[in-house]
Amino acid sequence: MSEFAGRIAALDMWRALAAWMVLLGHGALFFYAFWPEQKLAWWFATIGVDLFFVLSGYLIGQILWQQWPDFNRSRLWRFWQRRWLRTVPNYLLFLLLNIAIWRWTLGAWPDAWLHLGFLQNWAWPAALFFPESWSLAVEEWFYLLAPLALLLFKGKRDPRLWLALIALVILACGGARLVLAWHSTLSWDAGFKKMVLLRLDAIAYGLALVVLMPWLLRRRTHSLFAAGLSCALASAWLYLGFEVDRSVLAKTLLFHLSPLGFALLIAASLAASLQAQGSQNSARNSAPQPWHARLARQQANWSFSLYLTHLPVMRVLDHVLGPSATLSHGWLKFVLYLGLALVWAALNYYLFERYWLQLRARYFP
Image (cartoon, rainbow, N blue to C red):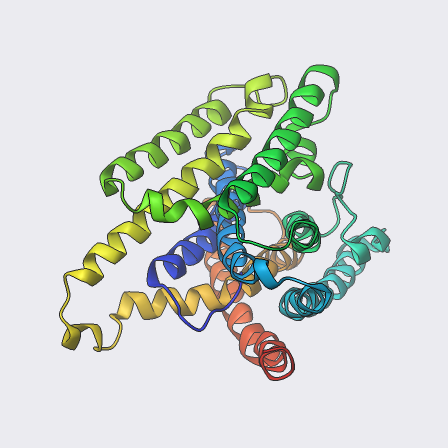
């Protein structure tokens, strides 16, 4: 969820898609009374977050890869300061808003202290309060730990060392999930899916793309797309076809297939973009971006705010309008949910989030 001077339309489209997958997947809850079997919708939202993880790993990984040879404590602090100015102000704002909504709708104060240190799901099941924050905790711990690892091995940019460190993270998270799948009753959703120490490897797949991309771009685009789609479909089969709380495969292999599939699909889209770019002449290259690319960029800019606004809107609508009594009532709430979440996300981006981005650009370029 970061901004770069040289924007790539394909990555903006993926980021916008991820936000809408989460938005639409959660929006299905307005029809729960008429469609109680919502596994497909929940899977849609789940893989939207996985897509966010892979994109974060790839985009932030490029920064770390470029700085690695000269990485030092000064660069480490600058990296953290830039990431914190990007994420923490929005996070704290919506933490306060969620506390207020919880108090208003339930008449009690939530236990929110762990959220101040992104510890609400560090090595234990995710909290019920501010549930969307689980993925933000995963990303914040990635931002904290990944550059520390590079600082330990600073010097020459070595792709083999980079991939070895990534493999270590994937093996550690995968091994922990395997042990827990056999020896614990931890739930799939609050535990395996949302615990920080079990999900850092999803971002690691995006990190791997940074050094593997030159090799992947030499592959056939349709082969990358087919491989990525196959992984995504296999992960969907494990989720939709099994009882996830009882399936060892759903608690282990599924969490490798989903981010791997998205990493390959992103590589395929970048390869296709480069091929299309190469076939254009210089005059066309200098032309304005088409409307769909501009729309994707706008939605990508709003994606962080949209991720934070959509569930508070849902909670307020449920409290004010009550449960969906009829199908038309459900559709009314769904349309209001989409509209209010988008408007709020746009306002939050332009009136609050962009201020911190400008501050970051001014003081930590």
